[in-house]
Image (cartoon, rainbow, N blue to C red):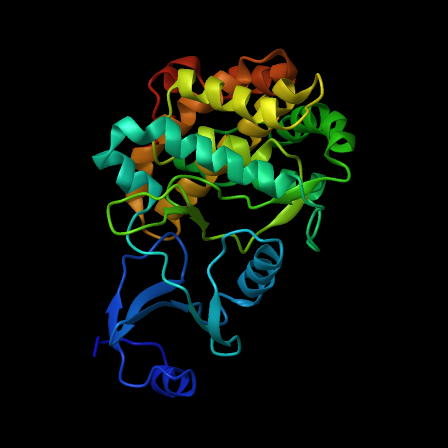
Length: 330
């Protein structure tokens, strides 16, 4: 068996009917969670190890069960022991959307159109029993930039003015996210599995990494998909997919502005998160993604709805640093 297995795993697998299964670790992500591919005979499954106190699988179980009840393609849950942080789930296979498109770039439009259709289906359902994506959450997230990016880049910034600018930009949007939709919050090409025989996309997609779901604005997950920190999405494809979504679900006249608002909010958050991963968690590999995030942030800041926040960036982050795309890191 693989070394460094989760505590209590043998008992957990035995109780779930998987005693003696083969266990292979998968590469980690930015969290403390670990994943293992489990095989016993011709059966396969995925093991999530979300060890307390750093992780808690309860939100994953809560959201995953709700998605399944709505007929959406979350992995089936085979066994769970939340106290030990162990969850055995359906194995969606090897084909993450990002990796599959590296090999099959001609299928890009099809895969993204299917991902948009999945959001259409999600947004046609009443919002789930989740907390609200409210002003306090938005503010906590955007504050990651002055808290982590600014000191890492060596900038002293106007933190109070930053909050004021975001308040002016985001508060007018909040009434438009009522009653809201379920927002998965990390809906991008690394968290979408393309289902079917290995290397053969059937058109069905599976959802993963949805444990942080909230109830918020319908534009948020579209931003997450089309302004992806981990994969280039052309402006042409971004526009085409936005048009596709708007052809399937009615949107108001503020939708484009709110898309830019949430794009800027999300991208500012991600710059802060990547700086934190570098400085606090010793994970410098995320720095290579910052130029892509910074490019998207600049496009969002160009929208008139972002003028107060854009003015803050002009005053606090030097133009030459921003033009260098690295944002002062790396």
